[in-house]
Image (cartoon, rainbow, N blue to C red):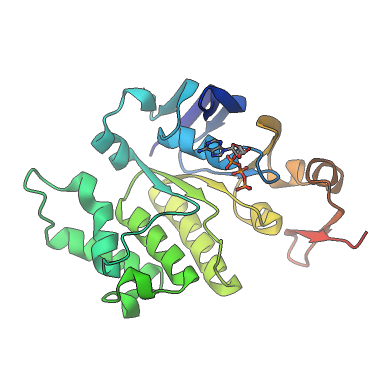
Length: 257
Ligand SMILES: Nc1ncnc2c1ncn2[C@@H]1O[C@H](COP(=O)(O)OP(=O)(O)OP(=O)(O)O)[C@@H](O)[C@H]1O
């Protein structure tokens, strides 16, 4: 079980900060969703946790500073699925998902039986078993997105960073994916940070939501605390209503102006 702590994280590009002074704790086994309007800095914040953009402040994974971890060790602790990954198009789905095992392989870099089992488990869980021998370039957008998530699952890291994981997925595959992530955190104590544009999904799956606006934390708390019609209307310049479904879950619905 690995907890995350972000302490005064400021991150950006070429000396220009686009995320400023973010402090938040993500307990082991919990799920934090980062929401906010386009350009608010959600992906940049996720990349700073993955150690992929220069940042000041500190990101602690299991009490250790990410900045001090080597590449391989970091990859064993943190799995990161980018929003628009560049894929090695010629690889088959299986060979691509096997890349997720790289940080676990021995000095000869050869995968063993258990690595192949983990990969076929990840393919099954993402409904990709029937596509395992297909080259990535022949997949649809949603299938490619699922292949990226299968690679991250095969990595078996204690922390999952998922940038817009449901982009391009139909409603059924989006639900299956989010249920799967939820199972992982409940069964294995995986800690999850995801960005999400779909505010109804953000209301229903994560246990906490962080609203980022213009690079700064505008609110953080449970979905019910953060996702109020007033706050969303203000920060997204949108007109929304927050409804309660018959099962008690929240639904964020746009309303015509
Ligand atoms: N590589 C880069 N170099 C320079 N500026 C960048 C780079 N990547 C992102 N930015 C800028 O940083 C700001 C935050 O971008 P980021 O992608 O983190 O926002 P976001 O909240 O994830 O947006 P979206 O919802 O549109 O995906 C934007 O103004 C963007 O133009």
